[in-house]
Every structure is written in C-alpha cells, then in structure tokens.
Length: 111
Image 1 (cartoon, rainbow, N blue to C red):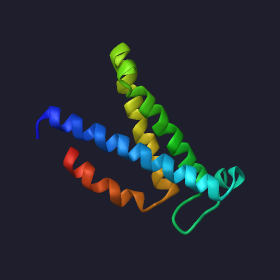
Image 2: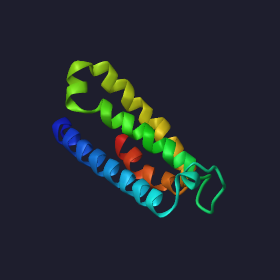
Image 3: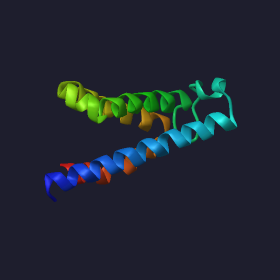
C-alpha cells in the first residue's frame, strides 16, 4: 500500500474512531451522571469509567494536534501529540480490557 493511500485510510479511521469514542461517551453521560463517569470502580470489563474519560480527553488532544492548521504551523507539535495516542490506548485498555484484542490487527499491519 502506498504512503498516500495509507495516510488517507489513517485519517478516515482516525475520524471514525473519534466520532465513535465521543458518541459512546456522550451517550453514557446522558444515561448516567458525571459522578458515575468519574468513578474508578472495578467492573466486569475494566477498571472504571474514569480511565475511559481520560482516554477520550487524550484522543481529543491528539485530534486537535492533527488538524491541518496545527500540522502546517508546527509539524513537531503534530508529531508529539500523536505519541500521546499510546497513552490514550493504555487508558482505553484499562477502561475496557477487551480493547487489547482490537489493537492486535492494526499493530500487526503496522509492524
């Protein structure tokens, strides 16, 4: 796969993921309360909603750093905010432990 096609695919997957993450979070907040969102209780799927919230905030920072004006103004900022995605994935795995299984196929394709 060419670099140009890979970048196009990477952007589409990134936008789709951000939309799904924030739809998931917004629906969850609407159905519960902020007090429950910020809990750190062990659940059947992970270690609490706080970790998912932190993951969402990190991915929001990555998204802002990936916007074209930011990328054109400071490529270093774009590059370093993308490294935050690793921390976001770590918090996502703590939030819902099944997340690790969804990371294996893209990591296999990347490496």
